[in-house]
Image 1 (cartoon, each protein chain N blue to C red):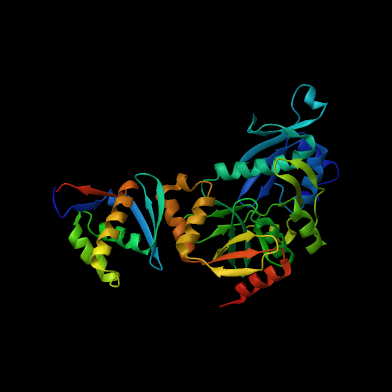
Image 2 (spheres, rainbow over the protein chains, first blue to last red):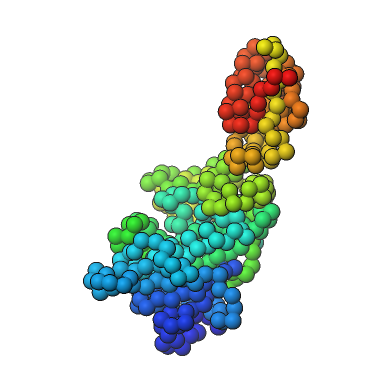
Length: 304
Length: 98
């Protein structure tokens, strides 16, 4: 059963009661929340994700709920709970779904050490992974959204999960997180995108989410091999440019963007080194011409 | 002081490395640090790793000069000394008294 199959009222009953166990790639998260904004966003963005039963192991038990006290009612706030404990400072109740998404990122990146985890968008074509490692503000999610709109399979918008030995990446298809100018950019480029209402004044500015394609969610169990490592950089009005990148430089950028490289020690070095050795490495600069950007990546994928 | 000093890699068993297009990335398990060495620095470090018991400066100069023949030998010696000082600062190499 998928979330979209739940009978009317059942999603609300689970979110407000025993919890909705949802399978997201290799993990199961049990989510609870009384907020309507979380319920509607889960219905929209996780419609194609499998509902896990309560007999199945849940990796994370998370909740987004109001605090006790006056902030439950006045200038309402939301709190993220991980295994029963409050994990972060409260945010406005209107930001409850963003808080859930950021909280899930934290849960996965700080606990799933069976993978080497890199802050990167990942897409797939013909069984090969295109890894876009980058710090926030590099245009990674905008590029990811444009490529998904043009048929690339969404692997992950935020976290590259790399198996030890570096020969396989595991998919984690979740909503694509867009911020500020990229919201209008993707809305214009991909008019059919299922996009959430924009939430303003978050810590990251304005935020909106794009629903992951159902196909990407259905294929989440299908891993990908190394393909390309591309460092994206958005520079307003810059010409589109793909240039080669040394493997050592690509390796160091992966290390810079890794969440748990140090946890893995020598094995982490070997994992990233094997991944880099099996990938083609590039630097990509673009100034907002997404059509041209997609053409560049399609050509890259088509090249022998 | 010996006029031909000996240099050793620090904990060679704790070092993992890969070389691509002449550049080297290296992981030092003893410190948990990862380093990116340019072709010259990489060749000095790899020479040290080939001699875990240590190598004299003159022998090192001879090994390195084979790969960097265009550089005058005096300049090459100075460059190697600078690289060795950097490697020592990074806890990758140590000058011994042997």
